[in-house]
Image (tube, rainbow, N blue to C red; front, side):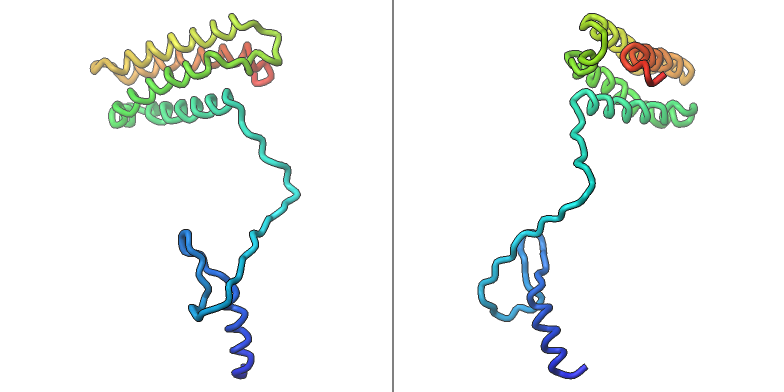
Length: 168
């Protein structure tokens, strides 16, 4: 490459900005006339991602909590090591359940009443609170915790059978 080509490449590179945090700096720090960089809009052919509804977000949180609890209840060793975390996750289940009690999305498109929804949510809440209280007791065994959590997941299944029959 000759000198003229290098000068041309350097001039072109000086027009490309570098971004450091909030400041945009050119590659070369030589004084330049004021240049306004136009924002670039990227358009794709992909459809927009739908925004999840509040109930879907709550159920996603409950699913993540459920998976974390199941990891701790996998065996006696993980139960012993994760007992404090399990207590916290058990109470998170009850908190998440109270946030979905007043949702109307679950019964909007189904032939169900509001009372059926609140009955199912309250039954789940009762089992989740029973599990949470059991986790507060220091003498709870691995088998006892596993049996109590099985009751909680049975309430999950019962609700999904009523409100999501296609998921059977």
